[in-house]
Length: 56
Image (tube, rainbow, N blue to C red):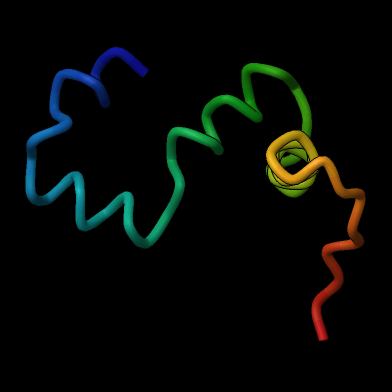
């Protein structure tokens, strides 16, 4: 995570992170939960709504 912060101004890193949320994925691994569960918890925390994230 510190390495990501050090390279915050890197254009290559910015382009890569626009495609994939590596920081969020890494935090999900540290918390030992699936990335999907991490995203659901983050969404719920930010919106205060419990909405099912189901693909259509």
